[in-house]
Image: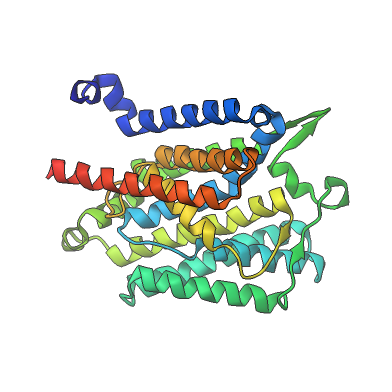
Length: 327
């Protein structure tokens, strides 16, 4: 095993990523054998629909976890942004482009509040994000008067935003959302690995005090991580309504756990200082395939939570063992 890990090609790609890709392929093969309907194009599109918004949530929270923090508010923030933007569209009849922008702004505002409380007020990220989560649920419910919001379904009825998810060419539906998610992942990877902002964010998770003593404004960069996370939650809202159109207030909690699970599964350390955008992307795909595969087999989604929990525990355990070996 050590010989394989030390192989130059394996080291360049990353042993963890290779394992994740193998897990993804094995899962796909297993569900295809157990449930032949899983191979249908509609099932693949359904799994991708789930991966789009979850992917944006996971990409955003990767930056926060890299600092050694956590954000449990991303799911409800996504729903709050979708509810507010949808209400502005359907009830106030504002232009669709402005409503989509408002979704991103709502997510960004929550990220600013979260980041300021953690970075400048010194509040624990766990408690802060839990409080923001409840606030987001409440604000979304109050804004819509506890009513669900239905976005336009057809492109011809003003729902051109759905082209961000899939474009219909004849009888074939092309997954445009996958292209956009991949582009977003590449941009996030460049920011995290090739810019000073990314290096500072990763350094915060490794040793915040050492970074502070070197003259870096740690509060500023920690807050920026939360702003990125909130903004991505606002973008995720657009992809959620693009896939499912109807949003109900008071929901979103489960998506926090799944997004964080995708990050941890992909090699982002809960202790901070180590993050992988490509690993997060693969982790999200595993969760999406798992969710769709379980539904294809006729089981309830509860089984997905059990399996996801087991996978996350295994990933965290592997991370702890890896850190101990390095130390």
